[in-house]
Image (cartoon, rainbow over all chains, first blue to last red; front, top):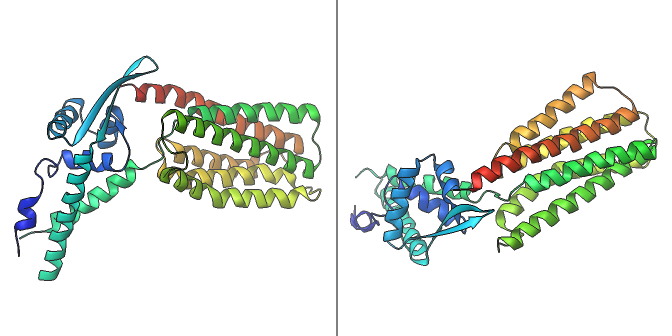
Length: 103
Length: 200
């Protein structure tokens, strides 16, 4: 079996804590920090850490604003994040296809 | 090489993307407006002395159309405010889930509006049960306790069928309490919980 697709998987996305974040953000224009935390049942610290990693990789943009005089943090996938996620899915599908062909 | 993880990852992604695309509009103003309209309509029905089965069915179907219009206007206003499309895929899925039960309720109401049926007291529990089913179906694509709210309507309809009073005046009262009061109360609950949830 060709190990190339596996080696090409983006390590920033291919992490247990970050893949769900990217998956949710890929389905919606944006998510508030609270919505992400509640949906994924993560702690504030854990989510902040993963968001920071994704932000540093250029995959996620974070906007801080106010809604009804309360601070609101929203996260969204950047075009680079969307591209990387699409490539990640293509590689996963390739791995599954190879596994099925090998059986 | 073990590759089950790849399939599992794809499944996780699919599930999360579906969950991420749920209908996320704030429902508090919709519930509040529908509730207040229902309560006001019950008061008007009592004052206007709506007494025949046909008038009862026609009157409350008219109220339902007004409530639906209010809900659509409020949702559209929110979509414009957030610069998001109004007829988005989650909105479409919710509308599709609501439609079958709404259609059955409309058909039952129209059938009754044509005559003067003595058993008109059955219409509120029937509408309540169908509305509960509609909310339960839409609840798969919506956050919070919409499914539970739907179950509340279904349970109330069941209780009403067996133990509720069987008169036209009680039917107006039932419409006011269940469609008006319940929505208003849920709207107040959502107003406070959504406000807390949106702040981060």
